[in-house]
Length: 365
Ligand SMILES: [Zn+2]
Image 1 (tube, rainbow, N blue to C red):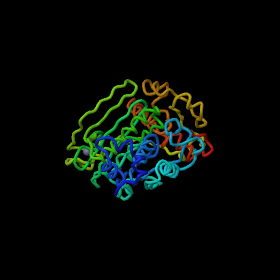
Image 2 (tube, helix red, strand yellow):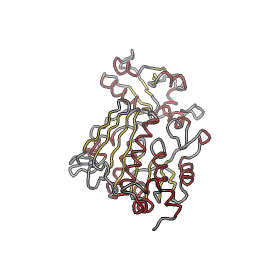
Image 3 (cartoon, helix red, strand yellow):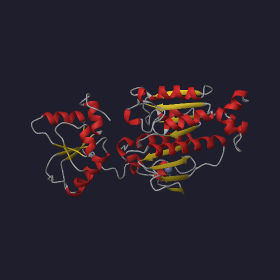
Image 4 (tube, rainbow, N blue to C red):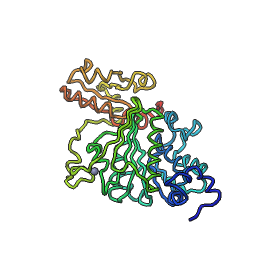
């Protein structure tokens, strides 16, 4: 492969950098990269990879653009609301660089289908927002012997790592309990737009450096606190008891520490609320979220007060807790169980699931 005159001009600003040059550019143009998630991290990573001339890019996402995405997902605009991200981002990437190939993979990635989906790509960028998909990526990369770049962002904080699970530490070594955690997507925890932008830029850089054969964060973990401007990089070690890659890993250790929660589905809750003996339904979100939209018949309850004092409820009362997803209510459920509350339930999937399954006309945010 040799570069055309137009390509020399297009890539001239990176071609002149030592370590890149025409040979490096050819490596980029022959590389195949999968980006899993086209949200706050992924949509920006994708733009940089396309701009740099990565030859084949796979976009994996199953969602449509929502109004609440736009403060950080700058690839999309207001007129894109309701449209599928994969199609939009593909169009955008080809507009940035018509000389590359972009594959849009719509649909959910699961533990079962992920290996086949990512096998053709050289490197993977983990830009998802939930632990279940992250764990699936980690295991698939371990089995396929692929190197991947992990990025995550939470409020003002970011984290970044380059994992080569078959030879070095993996996500399971870093956070052994990750597979048991509830999905706390940034929808629930919140995220500052530029914090996502900073982590996304660093993820894109690590991918490009991997392709170019330059020094990367491999085996290391970067913790970035943008609120305090405190940035640390630590060395990671492979754990013999890692639930994913460890030699001593046993099946049951994967489930150790998982606390079973009593869940109630939106459909079950609806039936119960319509019955003669409805449970007390407590909204644990912030007050402004309750004012924006809430499930009729509920009571807003201060989360901190509930977990500290029980907020005046008795241990024999039947309580159903809900939040936006389910992590806040799951935490409160555990705290109340420890206080001797016996009949506490968590609304599975929170108000998001309620809006999807029980009240489709409900305002979503
Ligand atoms: Zn591991």
